[in-house]
Length: 230
Ligand SMILES: [Zn+2]
Image (cartoon, rainbow, N blue to C red; front, side):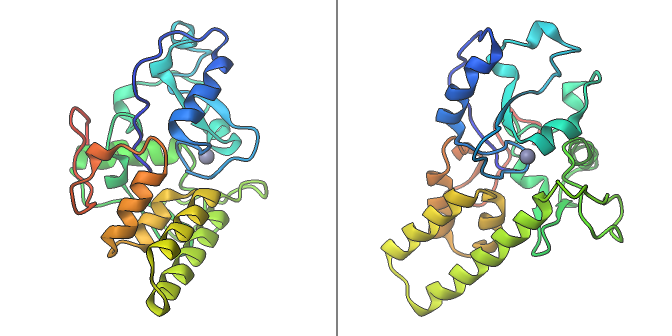
C-alpha cells in the first residue's frame, strides 16, 4: 500500500465532499487502499467512520480517498485507529507484498505486533479478496470486485515494459513507462516489478503525487516512517 503524505492540515471541510478536490490535488486520483486509478466515483474516505464518529466527519486528518470496493468493505462499526496501519501515517509499503496473480499478502518481515495490525487492515479493506481461496484467509470477491484482476493486469504490463527496457533503454522510454503507470495506478505493483531498478523506482516515487518520500532511503528501499507505527 503506497505510503502517502497529505501535506499541511487543511482543517475543517463541511460538507466533507468539499475535501475531494484538495485530496486529489495532493494524492492523485487513486484509491488510498487498493491503489487503483479511479476515473469517476472516487470517495472521500473517513478513517474513523462518519456514522460512529460524527465529530471526525469534517476533519481533514480523518480523510483519505477510496474506491467503492474498499469503501464498502470497511463497514461502519467502531474501530480503534491504533489497531490498523494507515497509508498516511505508516510506511504501509513495508507491510504488504504483491504478486503476479494479483494477490496482496501480509509481509512476514515485520514484528508480530505489526503483522497483526497489517492482517486486520488487509481484511478490513478487502485486500484479501482473490479467487484463489487455497491461500489462508483469502476470500472470493464478488463479480463486481475486480481489484485482484486489475492488479494482475498491471503486473503483466509492468513486466512487459521491463523486458522492453532490456531491448531499448532511454530516459524518454522510462518516462513513457511512468506515464503508463500513472494511467493505471497500482503503484506498489510497479514498484515491486521494478524492484531492482532504482532509477525506475525513484521515478515512480516522484511521479505519483503525495508519495511519502520519507518512507524510502536514497536507494528507494523502504524504511520505517518517522513517527509511524511502521
Ligand atoms: Zn480501493
